[in-house]
Length: 140
Image (tube, rainbow, N blue to C red; front, side):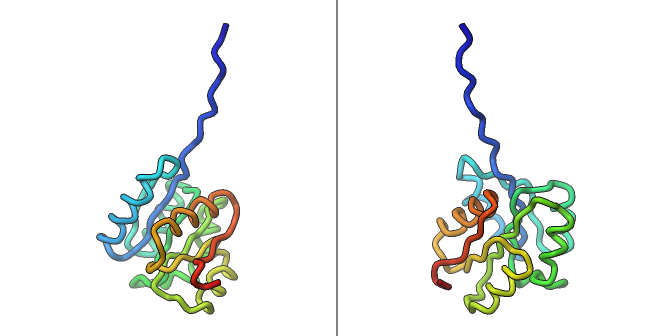
């Protein structure tokens, strides 16, 4: 008699894009500590993040709003084009609702303020990977 087949859940693959190496490292530790999440690459600017998106085709890109070089916000459609099926979660210090509206209008699936609880980012990544949207509770 064969034993029942156990469903295997595939971890959600993630690319982290933030210009601060220490922030990327902390985000990696946070996200990789969750059994269903897996950081596959990191980038310090938009162009490197786009290349990571093309190469790794992650389920989610966690993208810092303010990085040197090319701005992140207008690049959101390029991420969606470079890696179809990939969701973008913006991570930022900007807590003004106008930024969140602009990010979501550009195609982002989530918007998390860096002063939020760690659980907010984890929830945003999971929601985006599942095809939903997430907005930092502080923004209403």
